[in-house]
Structures are given as C-alpha cells and as structure tokens.
Image: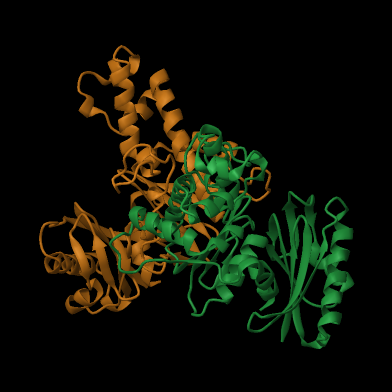
Amino acid sequence: MYYIGIDLGGTYIKAGLVDEQGNIIYKTRIPTRATEAAEVIVADMAQLAHTVIKESGVNTDDIESIGIGSPGTCDSKNGILVYANNINFKNVPIRDMMQKHIDLPVFIGNDANCAAWGEYCMLPEKVNDIVFITLGTGVGGGAVIGGKLYEGFNGAAMEVGHTLLLRGGELCTCGRRGCFEAYASVTALVRMTREYIAVRPHSTLAHRCGQNILDIDGKTAFDAARDGDEGGKEIIYEWTKYVAEGLVDIINLFQPQYLIIGGAVSHEGDFLLNPIKEHISAYRYTRDSQLQTRIQISSCGNDAGLIGAAFLGR
Amino acid sequence: MYYIGIDLGGTYIKAGLVDEQGNIIYKTRIPTRATEAAEVIVADMAQLAHTVIKESGVNTDDIESIGIGSPGTCDSKNGILVYANNINFKNVPIRDMMQKHIDLPVFIGNDANCAAWGEYCMLPEKVNDIVFITLGTGVGGGAVIGGKLYEGFNGAAMEVGHTLLLRGGELCTCGRRGCFEAYASVTALVRMTREYIAVRPHSTLAHRCGQNILDIDGKTAFDAARDGDEGGKEIIYEWTKYVAEGLVDIINLFQPQYLIIGGAVSHEGDFLLNPIKEHISAYRYTRDSQLQTRIQISSCGNDAGLIGAAFLGR
C-alpha cells in the first residue's frame, strides 16, 4: 500500500506518495495561497493529492490514506486545525473538508509532530520513546511515547522552544523572555553572529562577511568555523552550548531512547552534533547511567514531515 | 483484593495495606537503617510487610502484590534499584531479594513516580495524561502518559527539578547552575526568606522571626503572608512566580489534563495554588486555547507515594 503525505507550510504546500518503507515515490509542490480563505487552501491540497495520484500512476485502490502535517495546534481526533498563525486558520475542519474533494481517509497532525513520527517510523530499530527537535527559524519538537505520537490532551504538546533557558533573558516570539527558542534557534545563531561582528568590526570573521550584515545567515558562523576562523568557532561553541543545555532538559525529563535533531542546520552534520554531544555529556543528570539517550541527526532531512504526515494513517 | 505499599525513604520505611478504592486500611513505619547493607534494609521491608499482613488481619490470599517506592533510579521491568543516593544502593535486585522473604509479586518504582501514579489512580475521572510535581527539599515529578507510568527507557525520566529556569543562576544540588529545583524547592523558599531578613533586619518579618535565622522554615513566609505581613507576601509572590514559570514549561511540553502539586508545602492549599494559577495564566503558551490543563493540589497528600506504590501491581 501507499500513503499520501501533505506538508502544509506558510510558503509551499508539498505533497508526496510514500510507500510502506518510507520511500518517496513521487513529490510535488505548489505555493501556499496563505492570504486566501481556508476553503481555497484545502481545495488546493485536494487538487495536489489528485495530482500526486495521477502523476505517480498508482491506482487509488492502492492508497491507504492521506495525512496532512500543518503548523499550529491540531485536534487530530476530530481532524480539526484548531489554530495556525501563519495561514490564519481557526477551527477549520480540514478532514471533513478534504473528504468532500477526495474519497480517502484523511488524518491531520502538527508539522513538528509529523516530523517526529516520520523520524520514528524510519528508525532502523523498534523503540518506545523518542524526542525530535527541529532547529530552524524557531525551535519545535515532537515526541513519540510508547510507540504513539504524543500530542497532549489538547493537541498542543511539545512546544519545546517555549520552555525557559534563561528567565528574563532574550525576548522570545511568544512574548516570554528567555525561552529555549530565543537561544537555540537559527535566528538566535544569526543574532549572535551579527552581534559578534558588530562588537568586533576588525575581526577576521567581520572581514569574511564583508559590509552587509544582512547577508549573514545560519551558515555564516559554521562555514567560518569549518575554515578555522576563531570568531566562527567561538560562536558555534557558544550557540551549541545553548542548544545542548536545552536538550539536557529534554533528556532529564523524557529519557528517550533517541533524541533526533532536525531542521535546516542539521545539514552541518557532525560539526553540529559533536559539540552538542560534548556539552550534553557534561551537563546531563544521569551522567553515570549506563543507559544513555542516543543523540543523532535527522535521517529523513527535509522529508521527515512529509513521510510522517503520510504515515499518520499507518 | 488488597495491595501492600512500601515507601522506602532515607529516614523511615513506611508500609500500608491499601484496598481497591485506595483507602489505607492499616499503616506502620520503622526507621530506615540507611547505613546498613542492602540485604538488611530489604529484610526490614519484608518484615514490615509481614507486620502489615498480621496486624491488618487480612488473609494473605487476598493480597494481590507488594509495591515498593524508592528514591533514585529504578529498573522497574527487572525489579532492580539501579541507583539511590541517600541509602547507598547500587544495582540492588530488590524484587528477587524481597521474594526470598515473602511469597507475593513484587513491583518497584521511583518514589516520585509512585506518587504520580497514586494521584492518577485517585482522580475522580479517567484521563490519559497527568504530571505530578512535588515541592519539597528538592523538586521531583512523575508523569502518567496514555494511562501508564512514564519512566523513560532507563527509568530515570521526569527529573523535573533538573531542568533550567535561569542558566548560570543559583547552584543546584546536581552541580548545574539555575535548575528549577534551585528556585522552586522549599529549600529555595527558605533561602529567599533568610535573604530577605538578612537584607531587611528591621522589617516586620525580621521582627516576627526573632533572632535565630535557623528557625526559619518553609512555613515562615506563608504564615507571615497569611497574617498580612508585606515581607511574607513579597516572598510568596516571588517564589510562586518561580514555581509557576517552571510549571508553564511542563504545561508547554506535556499539555496534561491535570498538573498536580504535592509535597509538604501543598498543605498551604489555595494560598499556594492561587498565585501559581495566576502566574501560569500570564505565561503559558496556549493562553487562547479552550482546553487548559487543570492545576490542582495533591488529593492524597503524604500518602500519594504509598498508595501509588501499592497500586504498581494493579
């Protein structure tokens, strides 16, 4: 059997056909008409699902279900998108609306939760509990507990980014000061890089970056550090320390078999993972335990959300 | 049927007979011979279980099982106490050792987890997910997820007290700086009360407390606040704010149906609960959601751990 996964983002709607092993057989995307009404966006998703079926050449009878990963809070039991900020949805019964367009079971889930589910399904061994963290513009996360996606009783669980790291510290997008997201997001890494350069305009890092501070992105410090630049190394050291301290909190709470790190920055591979692992070893509560959470980089990359959405119906 | 619960503490071993409804039919305790070898302490627990059976007059055939709540990390699957600090146990196969003394199924669990389980079992409604927090000398916790006690893959999960609140802040007993425990424990409340008095020796609170700073305990500020003392009110306001900020983190992660607060300080009732609820309302991520975690004081009080230990076998 096959599964259709839809990744509803603020910029693109991506859709793909996924087989039982998690291979993406066919993938396509269209821009999200984010300012339009929910009906329009849902119709676009249904249209995209039809495209996937047609273009992949798979028989509809061989498709088990459609899964939609969406930003915001989902009532997955009732198929309702309760609230999504960047596409202006509020209490939209996505499942019922989709089924008017297409005769397949429809499941919905939060996008970070879908990514967690995708990573979980693609692990080479069967485990009970994992936590997935995505480091991007913000910091998101999802957990699989006892082999099931954990959503909390209201679908809003695992807002990992919005737990305190430094009370009263940097202002977070959620209005609170000192959240993990305000220190461990790529946005924070960019801020730290810009601050470093602003304070040290004659550093080699500043010279590397040239005049335009707006060109600095999440790769700047990593690229510099990889080339041996002291400023780059210092920034990566500090930033991964913030990341690691938040991950220690997650480990101290969940003690999952796996803690999986995703998001665009996960492309940095061991260059990201190794300092994080070192910091975690120094701080974790169960330093002496023989059973330690395995920390690793996402194995699905950008496709985790799509695969996980597809597998919601598995 | 009946269940025997044993609460293995650093000072006392408590044991009780619990019926199906969670009523404690009979309860007794002996001092913990904390400096003795594991064999001695286990034999004491078995002896106490025999006492419970004899004194309660219940037929052994009517007893389902024995559950032991212990400090530290438990491998509940294999009945092994992996590590406990205050009684110097390391990889002690408590289950097998107990069964040499007494012919009943034996279960073990971490004490805070047992308390969480006890509170969960005693809720008037059946829910899926709760988190229990105990505010005492330290800050501990436990979670029931999907109707099951959540222990993590190594039995060490839910070290709620050892998640950051203020990175680089007060030194915690775990060696890290700025843990939730370092701000939200009763130990922290006592520290804050002493600091207040040290800085303001002519305050009404200082006069209330008299000369001996060592007489100050976790009730001092509460009692003063209840009597309208400004200093007491200020300390309780600040301390409950720390407590609430950590609880917000727990809610943002778990979104449980219930968040239950236990520990000795929970006797303060609404005087503790109301400011915590107010602070939480101001900070929680899902401020606009219709479905909010219910925050309440422990309904089992000091017996939560005993009832939960007894019900491990249920």
